[in-house]
Image (tube, rainbow, N blue to C red):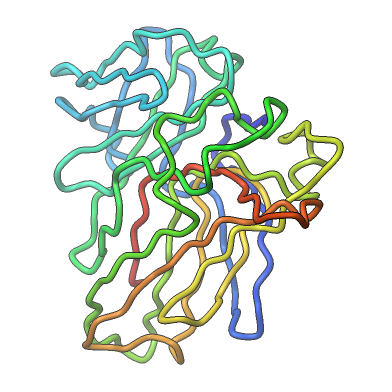
Length: 262
């Protein structure tokens, strides 16, 4: 998989009949070159953020920024790998790094959380069956074992105003082996392909994730939301469409899921 560092990290998604507008990419989070080392800053003010937690789960690496917001990766990145940044009062943020992007210092700007933000997941989640080809997207970069073919989490959402909408934001996703992922060079599997992972809200399919990437946003149709009550989000792994003798799930990993009301 090749994901390059940019202010907007593009992605492609397709939606079912419930779907509305889908926006994507890293917005207020930015990454730029600096001369004096890696740094985490406030995306709005530009001020350094001390003592933010920086983790690279696949490398089992964890560190904190110093009082100037500076940090070291502390590990060599030679393939697309997810880095996560967390700090109280800020939205959890993740970024897919590769050897090229870590060849120069980084400034990672993170955005303050909104009181209406709902944090769904900050751990690394692996879906599938722990059986995958060495040519699969990110096959060597998985950090944890599979929890099974689907992930589900309940959450409460308050009554929204007429002009507010809810968005599921996926921090980072790796491992997808769809036809589109193959076409853009993320997957090197040549003899098979998988259908996309599917995203559901309250049992209604609202999106498919066709490629790997960061900062993907899915608008939740208001018609499927139980406002003022309990809701659930479910992500289902795709399946190898060339395997008919048994179910062969496409292994993927993702982290940092939040719901934004805006």
